[in-house]
Image 1 (cartoon, rainbow, N blue to C red):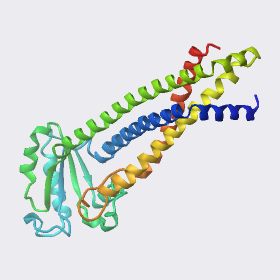
Image 2 (image 1 turned 45 degrees about the horizontal axis):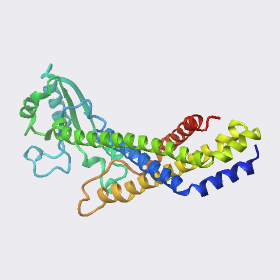
Image 3 (image 1 turned 90 degrees about the horizontal axis):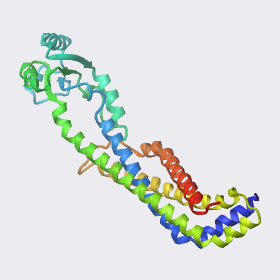
Image 4 (image 1 turned 180 degrees about the horizontal axis):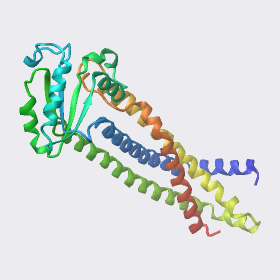
Length: 306
């Protein structure tokens, strides 16, 4: 098959069926956009949970040199003896205390840098400003108050927090949003498949005379199939590119611009960035190719009956 002939057929097909091709582009763009948004939401949930979330119910934060206004921190930064005292008490609370994890200020800072790598506040935070802590997993999370009562106000302890209760509702909301986005993306993908199928049928019907002539002159199935497939593939890939561009704009100007901006609302920080969009971009392109090839091939085999 001559390449010039094939390209000419593709160009003529796109020109003759411009409205249908544009429809495929738009539906592909919308479906892949929602799919990408769902994937980004899932990543946001995963990263937001942090390094310890799945293992920790309670956090005991020690005083730092910058702790002020807390009676238990009047002596300044917590000493090694005070930290050892807390650990000893936790050991004595077994079996309620199932596991104990210690996180130093340096480790807390490394985790902060990983989670908030897109934040403009990153350069303003030092390792000394983040407290060392004991992260505690309880055998019965409902008995959180026992740990609070034991350590709240103890010298060297700045705060005791129940992470699962504070973050649980928020993560459930994010999960609902991400699942909803993926569900909507599935619906849109189905719509894209149906539209592609209808488009191919219309194009095949409009070219039935041309196809009959090609059959009579002995054209192979590949010669007849390929222009149709390439047209749909180009339209779907263009939709994928537009979806990726929209996702990038949403994250860069929307998520990063809204949550990572100093000033009003500047305390809110997103944990995803434009790099996450590029991480998912190849998968969206592969999805577009699979949708186009599979749908086009099976539809043509059915309706062209070559």
